[in-house]
Length: 155
Length: 411
Ligand SMILES: Cc1ncc(COP(=O)(O)O)c(C=O)c1O
Image 1 (cartoon, chains in turn brown, cyan):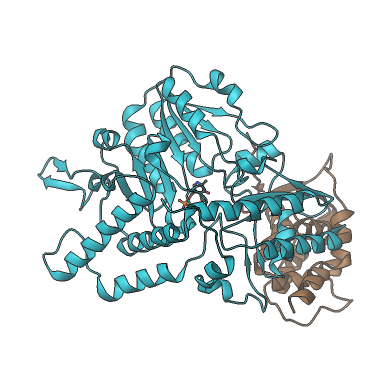
Image 2 (image 1 turned 30 degrees about the vertical axis):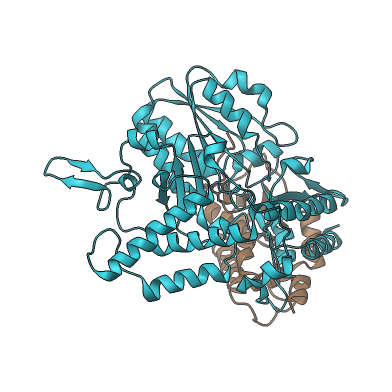
């Protein structure tokens, strides 16, 4: 039982995003950015968005932390490209709903969550849900025009 | 003194009800003892018995139950004092180590420190032995200095001459590091600090569960401990201090219990240790902690130390032999107690912890309330297996197999 949950948690797609993150870069030019820190574990994600004509033309992230927080950031930055702010926030809602309702039927291949669907297994591990949400929290802050709450500097 | 005893792990495990409770359908391997240890039947029963048969407020009522509660409470103080080699009137009940240190900071620190005075800490400290001193420094103008660690995460005694000055008023140092397991050379540290005219506060939270403590023999000025890490209840702990210091120090909290006479403008204080114990205390906690001390005395701290030493050494050897695993802290097992902290090349500590948890193994991942240790090690977090005398070599084997499984997932 627990073992199948672990396999569902650490799917190949998640590990692939963790090892080979997409859109992991600090952009020289961006419209908005925000950072989020999980103070419990020190995981950190900074999201930068290039917004053109009301749509997210490019999303990128930097950060460090566990496989779940980093894979989620990689997947999220892929999925929100081309969306306007309202659509991106709905995506965050949709993802959060999946995280907080374990046992829902798996989203189908057509689901707009795209690769993020692979993170459904996290919902079985409530202590890890904040890891998965970190990038979306930063996205929400960036879209709201607030800088988020980065980890304080070490010194 | 009883002759050195040996510890029978199967027998002591049977004393801890939770250890036979399956977790997620698997036998529990509890390796998060540094965060909080489990409770033997003896402690659970003592608390139960107290509430069923002895409870009333202490030091107040003339009635029979008040007498029983007061007797149980003061008897607990005497037994805990005996366990650490102290006199009962040097033992102040606190909520735990954190409150004990805050008591010294608030009562002694605020009262005695001035601008330019120095408080010497170490980069190995738990946040509870750093932040109270930062608060005191901000209020008094005292300055914080730090003794650093070397590349085996041991304190750099060679730096003492530099950081211990004629302005140093206090050295506050942990006996055993909760993040690393490093056992500090207290005798040398205390001698050097005293020679410089400084007092010494020892954070004993991670030492008391693993070795015999005799506060008088140790020769420090303050010693702080937490009941819940030594198999007693949560919410109870001890500040031990030399009697003269307790007598000189002003009170910490004001209220009932700690006064002799209250007048409109001022009051006089109760004798030590009651002067520092305002309000209705955690009576059941004290009773439970005394039961834990009795239990440990019966098993024998010499037996506990000898047994644990082998299990921790085995864990250290197994984990440090694994490819892609880095273990922190001293290589010499003589300088390590209770903890093996590690990171893996591919897997983040939280991922390690999740995989281990799915196999019934409880460890802690994170900064362990020791961010200066993380900074020294150059990591944001570590995975920490922390042991008690009820852990076994077989459990270490299961830990190692689980770490192998992490490797298979992430490599
Ligand atoms: C070395 C050390 N000091 C202090 C503390 C704080 O103890 P408590 O939370 O019981 O007050 C801990 C507990 O985590 C510790 O390990």
